Length: 132
Image (cartoon, rainbow, N blue to C red; front, side, top):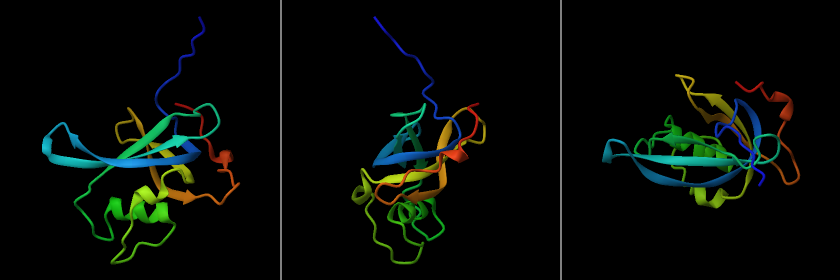
């Protein structure tokens, strides 16, 4: 039998990734406290196939909210009033994403900027950081 073990944490850095459809989830506080989980799957390198995600507040829909900013980045448009976007339109699209540690340093998540890649374009792996 052959096995391979690796961390389930994507190290901080810049990655080529595919957008996976987001979904509404309940947080540990129950149904009254819901969040929208957005996720990417890394393509290539040592973290190939691993997923990195982020929870965003689905209720705040101002132009300054994370959910509006991240949906706009998926679409490759600027943040403005009256945007009507559906993240399911971008499932399977490829992006250059930035992965960072959370404030406590116990897990990683994607962060702005997110840049949609043109067909055949590859993310700039020269921005990769040394794994922690």
